[in-house]
Length: 200
Ligand SMILES: C[S@@+](CC[C@H](N)C(=O)[O-])C[C@H]1O[C@@H](n2cnc3c(N)ncnc32)[C@H](O)[C@@H]1O
Image 1 (tube, protein in one colour):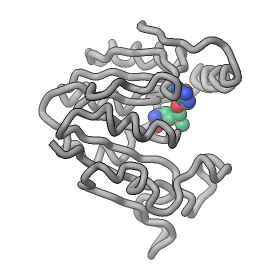
Image 2 (image 1 turned 135 degrees about the horizontal axis):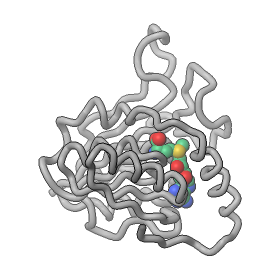
Image 3 (image 1 turned 180 degrees about the horizontal axis):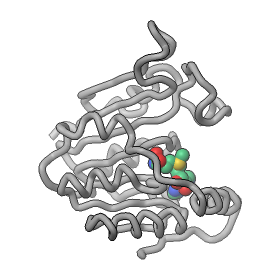
Image 4 (image 1 turned 90 degrees about the horizontal axis):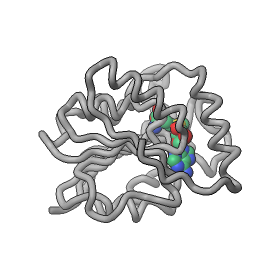
């Protein structure tokens, strides 16, 4: 596995916390922003699942025929993802990497998926990392919520419309943030979703 592991520092206890969690956790479903919009993927190209965890999004990307990389700083998550990928015959390149310190290089991916991860200073790097015509799929927790799911610290949740602001240089194909509108027993709640394309 390729590794760009940062030297142990202030964030290492947090990474160890994720490792600990991933020793037990079962992989969840892929993010709705990707699973429900597979028709917006290009037919080929390079895709990145950033802060992939157990990599359900990477599995979908690889299954859709994209040359897929999965980046996370938890080696446990990446090992478990690779076991699953091998069992399903999917080719995924894992990279153990602190994506805050080492975001993807400019013009490197046709698709970037980010789910349940928010590091605002990285947004301009993600914009630059998309190739012209490339597509970003982003889904994470919103401050507008109807349940206790997700982080309690509002700093780790999106303000209303924030994904549109963070990625204002991209052309939105889809934006969804339902808040507490209407029948809250239905719909996709507690998160905001953006699919957006970099102008060619
Ligand atoms: C809530 S999980 C989301 C995992 C996956 N994207 C999903 O939706 O199931 C957040 C992930 O971000 C990873 N992560 C947090 N900070 C990171 C960093 N600085 N560099 C790389 N990965 C990081 C954690 O290891 C964890 O896998």
